[in-house]
Amino acid sequence: MPVFSCGGMRYQHSWKDVPEHEIPSKNQKNLEATIERSLAVGINHIETARGYGTSELQVGKILRTLPRESFYFQTKVAPTKDPKEFLETFEKSMSLHGLDHVDLFSFHGINNLEVLEDAKGCLDTARQLQRDGRIRFIGFSTHGHLDTICQAIDTGEFDYLNLHWYWIFQNNWPAILRAQAQDMGVFIISPSDKGGMLYKPTPAFSECTIPHSPMMFNDLFCLNRPEVHTLSIGASCPGDFDEHLKALNVWEQRSEYLIQAENALHQRISETIGSDWWTYVTQDLPHWWDVPREINLRIILWLWSLDQAFGMREYAKERYSLLGNAGHWFPGQKATTLDGIMWEEVLADSEFLEQIPLRIQQAHEWFLKEDAKRLSLSD
Picture 1 (cartoon, rainbow, N blue to C red):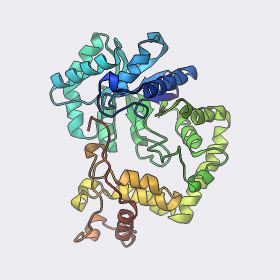
Picture 2: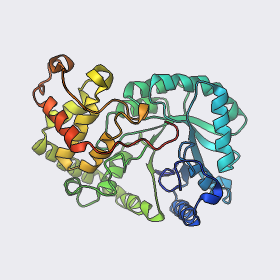
Picture 3: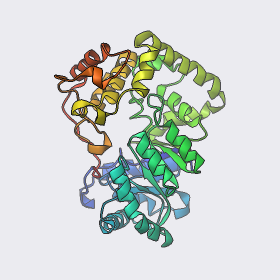
Picture 4: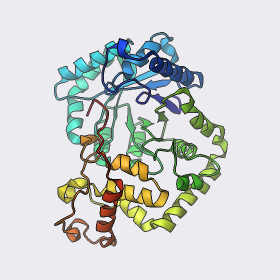
């Protein structure tokens, strides 16, 4: 596996299935040029999902023209309660991309225990597809809570996982270590976009990662851990690989640089919001299911902190808008009203009891925008 993967959720024509003749030739040419560039620089892992609309169809058009041994292909299909329905969706996926087998197959979106149970129910079907040579390795993707991820790993049924982990969000590190103990592959989802919109970084974050870009810093930070095997690059055009490739050019100098950059980032946190606060909001807050009205305090105060420390207002707005609109992909609710909440009971003996209600209210006022919905069809 290459250290970067070519993710297929930014260059497709539509998030819904449409007939091939409705796909503009300009869009298809750009997608094919992106994949050609990916392969030319050694990024030979191409990944997509049934939930990415026309992505499978469009990617398949170019991959079918290439020697099959020249690339690894991965797609993802959401598990269902009925294995027959899951198989039908898998067959549709295969008919769209047109390949005789997928190198890596993921159960898409094991984000809670209910979906994990669905995946377990579909495993016999997936194993038969594996015996038939249509699937080589079976894994899962997740946006779920750490406990859910660890329970999925502990089944011992999976060869690899796709999960979130990058500098601004390191909560899933215990899951990565758990995966390593089972010799699983570790694929990091969306480190540049979900990792802080690093393709258009804020001045405050950029200043901390000098002399390199935040995107390069984040790549080096993730890949510096041998437990991490590949980072997804959701390229929208051929040039989107360039900044990532620069990170590999300075690989040998990474150790001293990472210490310097991380010290600068933590110094900024200390000077703006306080190190104790950052530790608290990234580790110690109650889960959304333990908060009245299912308000996701962890996400809200984490976003407030990123905004105050690094000026990530646009990122915070995008993520906050998903609360209440993305189901198990981004659970919990916005802080629409705080009336009647007994904070002493919710936060127990928190040293930040007085600050938290005000900061939640500020976050709602600053980040509220037109609600977004997660685009994937596998919601």
